[in-house]
Image 1 (cartoon, one colour):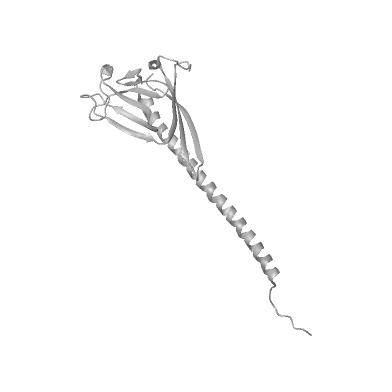
Image 2: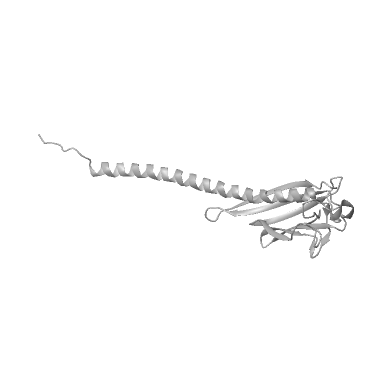
Length: 195
C-alpha cells in the first residue's frame, strides 16, 4: 500500500491562484471605478461652485444698481459685458443725496478677461467713499452671456440702459481625472430694485 502525501498538485495550485487573481482584479476594478466616480463628482462640484459664486456678487450689484449704463469709459454694455450705475456712498457708507445721484454714480463692470470673470469697481473720484478695485470672481469660464429685459419681460436687442431685468448665464469648464472635462452652465435673472 502506497502512502499519499498531503498537499496540492500543481494543477490545483494554478487553479487556486487563477481564482484568487480574478477576485482581486474584480475588487480593484470596483475600487478604481469608485475612486474615479468620486474624483469626477468632486470636479463637478467645483465647477458648480465656480459658477454659483459670481451670482452672489451679480445679485447684490444688480439689485442695488440705479440702472444699466450703456457706456462707461471704454466699457460698453453688450451680450458679454455688463456695466451698472450704482449710487455713490460717503465715508460712512450712506448713499449720497438722492437729488444728486445723476452726478454721484459709481460703476461696476462685469466681463470675461483671460478666461476669468472680472468685476471692476470704478468709484466716483472725489465723491465716493468706496475705492476702485478689480477682482476675479471665477476661473475656467468658457462663456458669459447677458440678456436684458424691459418692464414687460421682453428681451432687448439694443437700448440696454432701459433694462429692468438682467439675465446672466455662466459656462464653466473644469478638468477631471485624466483628459475628461466637465461643463457646467448656470443662469439666473436679477431684477433691478431701483427700476
